[in-house]
Length: 285
Image (tube, rainbow, N blue to C red):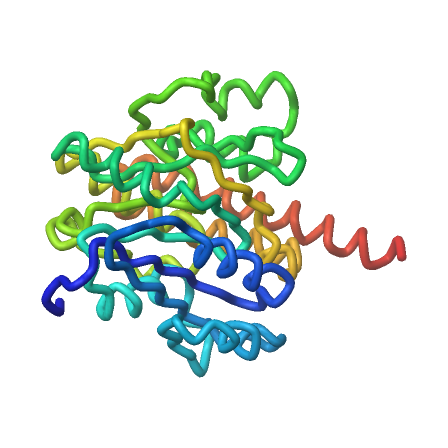
């Protein structure tokens, strides 16, 4: 890694985000952060006007990929160039506020064992998003694969009840906006590029937690998250396929052989259900 020159490196991975990436970057450059910082955007071979829009911000260090290499791999490309003491991983469908960066950096600096600080995620209407969770287990993964987590009874089994008004240490945080201490990444490693999409931040956070670091949810700072706008361009069946593949990789890395064997038929059943729903939607049009 290059010698650190900046206090903060902001990394944004974009794919077909023309609808919202301009608002994201505009909010970033309106920040009141008085220490040296840089912004690196990796465009994952967008087919819309994303690159044209990003180039309207000359302060951005832009990496243009000739193919979509996946979320984790694209972040790793930026991390190779980033020279910040802290790294802020930001989705292109997130908008921040002028004092966010200063407050987040101040928070992570309060304790040496804090590896990650995540702001509160809110929808455009101000309602809260679910962002604190547990690492995937066999039972909750099966419920999600079979779409049973959408039912009220099972939802409470999959998602922990959390007081989102309270600052707290978390096991797992959604990866939409994460401030990370760079030396932690140098210690535990960056993203595992076998995860094309989904579970890449889960795997990273698992390795960070296993190494004894803390993940902090910090609701005193909030950002607006438009919630998965890019991925909604992908068909539901393909999303299920990518999600299932990444879940399988996570289980191979972090779970027992017995758990992996038990999970497999439910992955297949989940794909059958998703395929059936896709066909139903086609023929109902």
